[in-house]
Image (cartoon, rainbow, N blue to C red; front, side, top):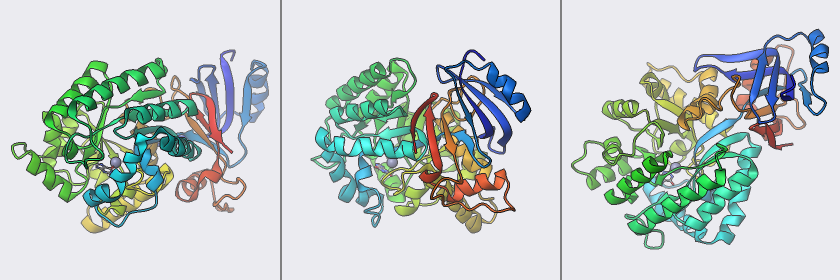
Length: 444
Ligand SMILES: O=c1[nH]c(=O)c2nc[nH]c2[nH]1
Ligand SMILES: [Zn+2]
C-alpha cells in the first residue's frame, strides 16, 4: 500500500473488448505517485475497508464513491481541428470542398496571428477537458508559431495530446498555402519542438499532418513520410470523406488505383497512421488499411452535418480495422465525445435500416470506440483506454445525481441502466473530476 497515493472505492466501469463492458461493484483501485494504476480489486467488502485504510500512507488520498457515482476511463478524441472551434456550430450549409473554401480556410488563416490563437486555443482545450476528453488528436493550421502555441497550451492544461502542424502546398487559396520547402522545414522544426516539450512524458506528441491528398504535392507527401519515419512519430490525414473529394483525388492521381493507394504510394500508411472518415471505402481499400494497420477516426457529427455520407463502422470492425471516435470540430458542431457516441449510434441505426443486414452499434461497442478504440489509434493501448493494472490513470469521476443533472433515476434502475443513461443523456454537469496520469486536470 505504501506506493499508493490515491485509492478509490466504489463502482468502476471500463471496456475490456468491443463486447465486454466490465462493471465492477465495490471496486478498489490504487494509483501511485506517477499516476499509474497499481491495483484493481473487485467486490471488496466494506468491512474490509477499515484495515485497508489503516495501511494507507498519511499523505495518500482516499475517495469513496457514493451509491450512483462511478469512475470510467477518459474519452479519446481521435480527430479534431482546434482552430475551427471559432466556427463551431456555424456554416453547416455546404458540402466539404465548398465548406473548406468559404468558411474554413479563411478562419484558419487568422491563426497567422498568435493573438488570435490565444483567444481560441486555451478555451477549446479547456472545454475538451471539461467534457471528459483526456486525450485529443489535433489539427492546428499551417502556421509554425501558432501550432507550437497549441502544443504549449495542451501541455499546460495537463491533457494528453497529439498536435499536428497542417501541410498544404497546392489546391489551396493564395492566402493560405506554403511552398513545399517551407512546409517541410517547418514540420521538421515543429516535430523537434514538440518532442522536446514533452521530454519523454508521453503527454504531448507531434503528429505529421498532410491535410489531405488534394492539398499536398507528391514531393510534400514523400518528405512528410520521411519526417514521420525519421522521428518515429504518427501521421494523420483525411480519407474518403465525400464523393467530390474522391473524384478530385482520382483526377490528380489518374495512375493510382484508389484514394487509399495514393497515401500508400507516398509511404504514409502504417500502424501509427490515423485517417479521418473513411466513409466511402471500397473492399480493396479496406483490405489495404487492414494490411497497413491504419486506424480510422469515425466522425459521425461531421459526416452528417456536411452530408458527406454514413460510415459503416460495423463493416470496418468486421474487417479488423482499428476504429476510434472524433468530433471533427467544426465539420461536426459538438466538442464532446459523448455526442460523438450518440451520433455514432444514430449513424449505425441508419445503416441498419438502410441495409437491413447490419446490427446497430451496441453500448459496449460505443464505449470501446470512445476509450480503448481511441487508445489503439494513438498506439497507447498499453498505457490508456481502460483500468488494467500498469496503465496510467486517465479517468472521469461521474456523478449521475450531480446538481442540475439531466439524468433522473428511478426504483427500476440499476448501475448498468444508470451508466447507459449517462452515455445517452449525461453531460459536463455529471463530470466531477477529470484525471490525466493520476493528476486532476479538470472538473467541477
Ligand atoms: O472534415 C474535414 N475538415 C477539414 O478541415 C478538412 N480538410 C480536408 N478535409 C477535411 N475534412
Ligand atoms: Zn477533419
